[in-house]
Length: 64
Image 1 (cartoon, rainbow, N blue to C red):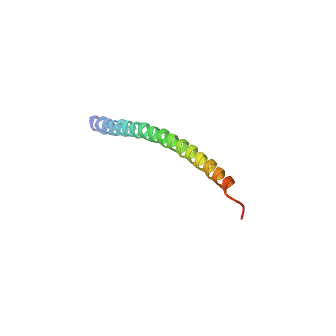
Image 2 (cartoon, one colour):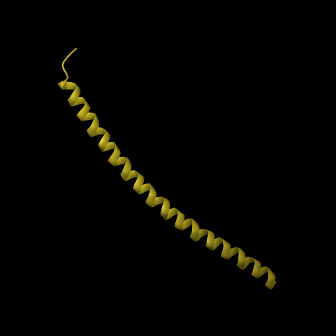
Image 3 (cartoon, rainbow, N blue to C red):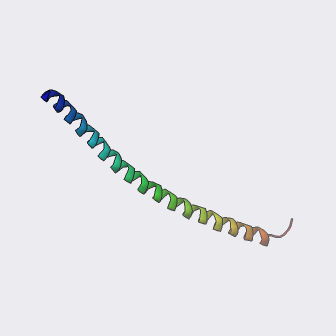
């Protein structure tokens, strides 16, 4: 019976360790998602600005 509890204790310890590792990875991934969302917003704004600048430039070109 003692061996059964020892085996169970070992498995519970492994599950706890895995949960801790997954929690840590989850936090890291959430942080990364936030960084990527910020980067996406920045790039979207830059693309919009570039588009407006190109449209303005095209408007100033003489007609062919």
